[in-house]
Structure formats: structure tokens, C-alpha cells
Image (cartoon, rainbow, N blue to C red; front, side, top):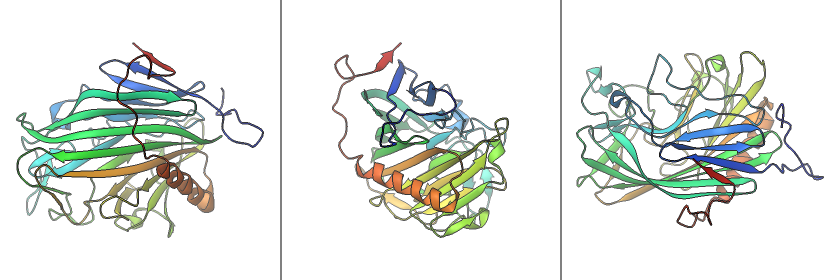
Length: 337
């Protein structure tokens, strides 16, 4: 497949089959035809200061354009698309310094890790790939904080777009209540980042942010919406791409406030802890689900809203977890190495 020309049937529906390559003990790569859609590194070699955690990078459109940025010099803890939380009780699972009320950012010995424990599912079925794994969130001192079960899936939506589905169930195993918040809940105005965070390419700086209410830029940060999108252009190819993030209606604090930037750099984050902390009792579990639509081209306001509907439809079908096990009878078109 060249230039993003996804095979289609007579009804114009995408027919491309997905594949997966499991680098055992490191991560999973999902492909569509000749394009690597994403690499999910579940066991990174990240420095402790950057709060080690799984991440998706590179993430590509079906046309092959990369829509993520890895470890930018301005925020080295930004890793493509990652589930990152800056304030989990006293712990920082975001990376870098911690914002303290009345003090500002300070580097503390509190950079925790989200550590891969075991892969529980890995399968490919035609135009759908799915994986799941368990993670141990530990403090910088090595103490247990959260037990997580995470599930990701990818499905082709149409000849120029595909959908990443993300689900996390996090159980508080710290033995004490955990209050999950953001720099805004600690006193920094309009800086409520934390959650599923996407960092876009440098060339996307100055691109268009869109919500259901309309298009704009940094002025949309902090507003509530069911979805947000970012439309940007690539250096080199001069092609455009669109990223749409959709919040599941069952998520806590739906619809969320959004942390989004365009002027300084490109990012999107549905931030459920933007301006109010969420208290999680010992042994309690919280669950979040999202769709991320990755599309080649700039569809304009109306077309971008249609992409959000694709994400919503994909979420509706993301209900039954995969059967446990990753043996030869479960893997489909999956290569292990």
C-alpha cells in the first residue's frame, strides 16, 4: 500500500487487514498494509525523573504521516500518546517537577512508575487488533499505589482514518485514599492537564483546535466538550492530518474540561481532574475509556465533527474484553519475536 491508498470494497468501505508484531518484553507494533500505525512500548527504558510509563509512538495516519512527538526538549516526559497523571496523592506519574501551591514547580523525589506486569491478551481479527495488559503503579520508593488493567484496540474506520480505543481500570492499592488532581487543583490557573495526553509534531504548532462549539486555538483550553480535535500540517510532505479525541459518556466528570495548546506546541488532553480532585478510596476502582481518531487530511469543521462520530461509534462497539491468554491459538496474524 502506497500513499495511504487503503483497499476498499464496492461499497467504499475499508478492507485492509491489520497485523501485529510483538517484541516480547518490549512492546507491540500494529500495521495496516505497508503502514506501521503505531508502536506501543509497554516496557520503556525511561529515566526515573520522567516517570516511566507505556506510550504510543510513533503513531501514523493511513497515509504514513507521523502525528506524535517523542521526548521533546521542552518537556522530555511527553511521550507521544500516554496515560499520564501529575498528581496522584503525593505521587507524580507525569514526569519532571511537581507543582506546589504557593511555591510553583519543584523537582521532588516523587516520580513514580507504571510498570508492565503481564500481557493478558493480544489478537488480530481482520480490521481489528487488540491487546491488554496489567501494570503496577509504584512510588519512586517502590511502594504499591495502583493496580491497573489496560486495554487498547485499533480498527480501520474508512479509507483514510482509523481509530485507537483506550480503556483503563485503576484500583487503589496504596492502603490510603488517593486524591487525583492537576496543577490547577493545586493553584495554577488553567493548567489542568492529566489523563490521556497527546503531543503533536512540531509542525502542528499554530494549527487548528476544534470542539463541537467551533474552531479556535488556545482560547478553547478549559472548556467542556465531548470531543476535541486538532488539525495540523506536516513538514516535508505538506500534507494535513487530523487527530480527534472522544470522551466516553460513562467516564467520571463527562464531558470533561480539556487541556489543549496550539500556540506553544500541539497537544490535546481530556482532563477529568482539570479543576476538581477525584477521591479514590482504598481498593476502589475507577475506569476511563476513550477513542482517538487518526485521519489523513483536513476535513474542515463539518468533516472533523463526522470523524468524532466515527470515534463515538467505535467506542460503542468496544465493550467485551478479549478472552485471556496470548498463546498460539489466540494470536491470529501476530508475530512474536
